[in-house]
Length: 338
Image (cartoon, rainbow, N blue to C red):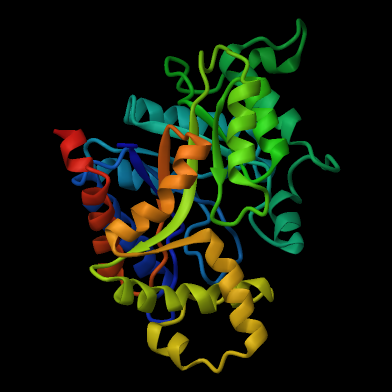
């Protein structure tokens, strides 16, 4: 069976304040650590009422400290928002504290709106346009120490200097992202849960174009999907109603806390809204464990990921924990761990 991992946005609901959402993330991480999940990744988003965590590095340290086996990482750090030296220092610190358990996932997007992105970067250097490659190159140089002769950064050391950067993964939702990850020879994680680009095309392209590097001798691919599992298909569909309304609002630019099932079921959907929901369901796998696995299997077979990373956004925290438990059983995680 394929390994399973978790992608967590620390989702805020209409009944859960942001501080409680952060504590729920820590509780969920403990839970899935005992179920045999491979990784627990945390996202970076800013100025969104629906997402509690803008600082994955802070959450990584908290979660790694209360878990024993699971790898903990960023899904991801939005590199354009940060000085590469700062990213290098923080993740070398995390790797020093939790050796062999940290991942550094990097994203190209700002993870927010234009005004917030400007506020995040207004005191950084004012490079224009997409400077992700430049920042990625600099981040790597803090590890390799291959700055040109006479470069002022030759006198700067990213501490702790006896600890390497953790494994680097490039995150993406497009063919460009898969091409870049293949060219630089790093791990690749594809965001099926919101991508408009075909996941199979991106994953196959990455494997076919991969060039071995000092970072990885062979391709390593993660497929991130949204899934909701419950004891019955009917109960899973009920839980998914919160996702449906939330996604509909997001498509309108309304990043509100996740609504309750009751609010979602009572919402007076128009025919066009129901059409949008049906279209968005192509990115969500819902049902009892066997149903979810059956729906996912053709995508897994065609895209051939090394692992499946699951994001489950439901209103009730206990229901979310149960969904991950059911998926762990369906995919045989307990047997794999044993």
